Length: 338
Image (cartoon, rainbow, N blue to C red; front, side, top):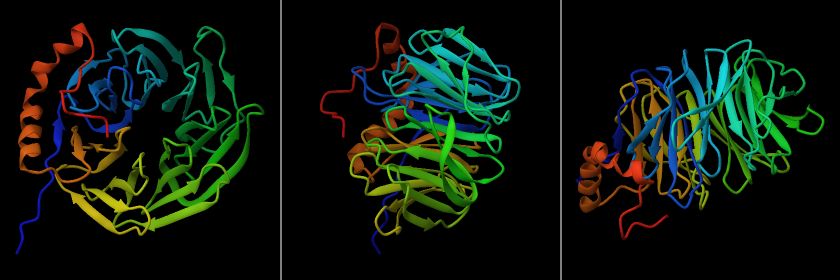
């Protein structure tokens, strides 16, 4: 019987509590970056390709539930249980702004043009902060029907989508009027909502289901039953032919987008998987878990040479941190964006 290849991920240690959110930047002139949110209060920035630690953003006093980078990876934002959302300089780690809220903040997202920051949480209010006038009062949209769990921008920042902790559905808001214009119906609360890189699809995870919606006409394109309750799902950004999902069975599953058949099942985490996200080139994807680790998996199982390189890189991480001081990590020769 042919021995099945086992995918060997890059394992990123550093967080002391569960990892609850991951976000990849687009590809920038300096490569691409991965930011992680954890209940340990300290969001961390990493090289998105190698997983090497770059820096930790220190200042929150409670669990950090959500994190993001602007499209140039120059600023980071985080949403926390300490009733604040913070904006950071992603090059120096300095705190630039702290936006106080009246309750736990669960979601944050930079607009595509990087000028606005969206926040939402237990207050049931979506707020939009102007990064050019951070001291000005934020704009508040109409009351959300429930506590906000996820929030994102789409349609060139003309539409906002949000989901709630305590009820099903994804709500779409017209940014100009501040009102809900459409609801995508789901049975269970949506714990993950991702707008595809090309803006065509919205990928949602609700209970034991992963759904794909047309982001322009809002029809349901695909709906697949999962082997367990999944907390997060992500669509491969280049071809859109695969998606990953992770949840309570501790495994990271890869599925065929067109048929829903499972292609790969990655085992390695020691706790439920809270978040999965594809890298911007689609060649790898990251998972964050209750076990406090981030694992970066190659989409297709590497050959022996590649896995040796991966193992070498996994241990080389600390030594490569010094490259960040002079500038961002430059990929080795021969490595190309996929």
